[in-house]
Image (cartoon, rainbow over all chains, first blue to last red; front, side, top):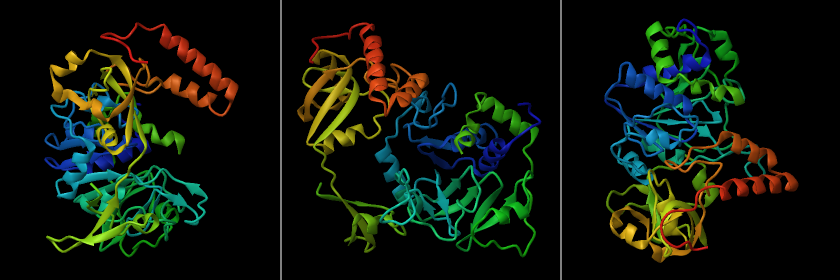
Amino acid sequence: MTAATYGPAELMAVAIARLLRDGEVVFQGVNSVLPMVAIALARRLHAPRLIYVNIAGGVDPAPRYLPDSTTDAELARGSASLFNNEDFYDLCARGGVDTAFLGAVQIDAQGRTNVSAIGEQARPKVRLPGGGGAAMIMPTARRVILWRTQHSRRVFVERLDFVTAAGNVDRVVTPLCVFQRREGRLQVEAVFPTSSAAEVAASTGFALDASAAWPVLAPPTAAELAALAAVDPRGVRRQEFHGG
Amino acid sequence: MPFQPVAGLHGSDIPAASGLRTVRDPYGGAEVYVVPAIRPDWAILHVHEADAQGNARIYGSVFWDRLMSRAARGVILTAERIVPTAALARQPELTVIPGLLVRAVVAAPGGARPCSCAPDYDVDRAGVEAYLAACGDPAALAAYLAAEDGALRGEPAPVGGSVAQ
C-alpha cells in the first residue's frame, strides 16, 4: 500500500488515533488490534507522552513489532514495569484510567454493548465470548471508545439482546463513521470520506439526529499514512476485516 | 476472602443473570456489587521453572495465574524446566507460586505449544492451524498429538535438577 491510498482499516486507525490525547492513560485489552495500532500511531504523531497500559502487562513498552494478538508478550517488551491485570482493574476503579477501549458485538443508541449472547436469554441462538471485564471497566474508566469493523443494522440495534456493559462510552468508530455520545445518545460526529450520510443512516438500526448536516472526516494525511505504515508495516490493522 | 466488592457492573444485565447481590458501602454509602469467591478444585498452570516441591517462577506477565493458584483447592504445574530449589531460593521474590499450594509438578518442555511461552518460544501459527484442523476427528487428533510428541522428544532435555514425573 502506498502512502497515498487508504482503506477502512487505515481510516479507522487514523480516526481512533485522533481521539487520543497527549499525556492521558490509555488502556487496550484482549482482541484489540485496531486500538493497539491507533495507540502506537497517536504516540508517534501527536501524543508522545500518552501512557499506554495493556493487557499483556506492558506500560509504555517498546515492542519490536505490533503482534497479531494483543495479549502477546511482545507488548510488554521493553516495559520498565509489569502492571498486572488485577492492578489495572484497581487503577480503573479509582479513576486512574482516562481512556479504555472495549469491543462489542451489538451496540445500542446509548452506547451500551452486548458481548454475551444473541437471541433469547434463556435459550440464546449464539453464545458470545462474554464481556471479560467490560461491565467493570465501562462505568469506571473516565472515557470509553468502542470500535467495530462492521457497521450494519445487526450491529447497531434499537434493543440489545443482553446488556453486557453500560457506562462512559464517548465515541464509537466504525468503517463508515465516528459516533459521539451526546446527552446519552450516539450521534454522528463525522462521516468517513469513503461513505455517505445516507449509507450511515441506512446501516444504523436506531434513530439518528439528521437535523444538521453531518461533517465529513478529514481524510488521512500523507503524514498520518506514512506514520501508520511505519508503526504497522506488517498490516495487522487489517486483520479484523478478514474474519468479518 | 468470602466474597469481594467490585467497582462497576451497574447498568449491566450480568448481575441479574448471575445472581450477584449488592451491599451498602459502610464508609461511602453507595450500593456496591459483591461477587462470590470462586473455588475451583484444580488450577492447571504452565510455568517456566519449578522445583520438585512446586515452587515456581513465571517470567514476564503472570496474567491471572497468580490469582488462580490462590483460588484453587489444588494446583498442578506443568513446567518448561525443573530446577533445583537452591536456584529459586537465591531470589525468592521471583517465585510467583509457592510449593505449599501445589499438589503435582509435571516436567513439560514445550508444554504450551502450539501457543506461546514467552520469552522461551513464540506462538506457532501453523501449529495452531494444524491443531484446529485436527480437532473433531479422533484419528487426525491422534496423529497430530503423535507428531507433537515426537517433535518434543527431539528437543534438548530440561536443564537443572531432578525431574518429577
